[in-house]
Image (cartoon, rainbow, N blue to C red; front, side, top):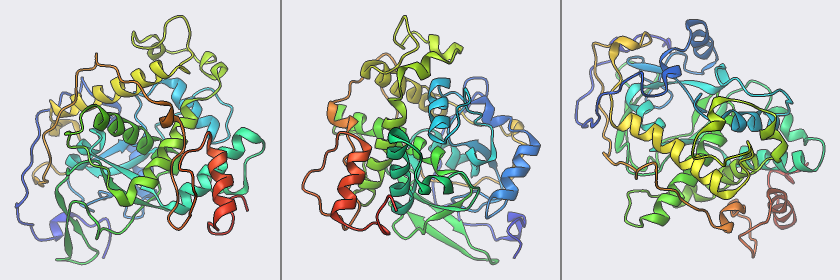
Length: 371
């Protein structure tokens, strides 16, 4: 069956799931997601294993070509990802196909509202951790080179709360679809062309946010699934490494977002924990509030069929006001992720390369990580 065949070829599925959302003003939120060029959309379609289908549900209707790392992120942060990828260019263009994917509109809304994330497999995260450690100590490891080549990667869908509560995923044949419900243990890894650098950054930011949210309010609906805890900690530690880049990097970039009132004054350096925390949570809260209080107008999407409405179960939860700042403990700066099967007495490391050394000395990881 042609993967790009219209969803009208499939039978209409039962509307058993409820959809909870509110209207979205395109002037308020991430407008770049609404205006991805047709040529770039075509690139994403050609590079995606399923073509122009939602990565999660494999629907072909009501799609949005959306960013993994959002255009609203501070340019300092973007340059740090670019440096991690081995480039000395100032800044990173997020409007590239390896940072874009197709999602059904409701799944996109939940993705951008920090309800769920994509997370690489353990093998990929281990190699990326080695690459990051090597980047601080000298030439990149051989593992690093594979991340520069376009290829298909496998990702876990990891919810941070019981939203979505469930969805139905199309198969390759007519009348073929499977219902999946939270926590999606029966869902196989999703295959995508999106680069792990962007996915890890996105997942790390979301995990750090939900960690702090749970610390502040133990009764919140945030729930980190135990089976993904160590993968998320690896993402967060790599994200932390990128976020704590040398001060001169931030000083080499100028941009209006550096002048936000909640960043440290008098310098572009965001190395202090207070500025880092303020940036992280206020930016995330802005995005969540935008998606929580509005709805996508069909007139702004030229990539979906607006006559058919899919449904999905969501939770209607909101975050504290942006003025509330959060502060991290020093343990949040350490890598506390242990791959399954690795027995290590200490669960905290000063740096990402300390973690690599511990893993290499304790157990094989597809061979040693630095092989």
